[in-house]
Length: 74
Image (tube, rainbow, N blue to C red):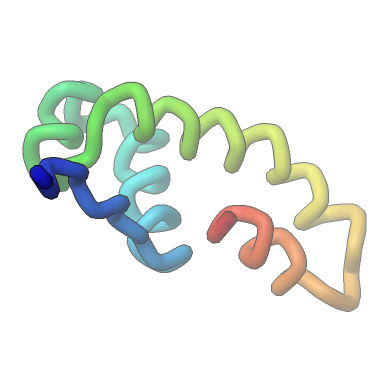
């Protein structure tokens, strides 16, 4: 029996937010950030799109901004 399955990596919400922030600065290419972080460019694009889609919630819910950060972490 072979155990060649790769373990799924999990990233903290803080890590994702930091990487997405770097993407939004546009100082580095998607490929550069993927190489530096070890996260695929496809996954980085998903995180960025998710963050941009959820960003308006920051301004809707005056009382609970943590709700947006919890969704970024998922």
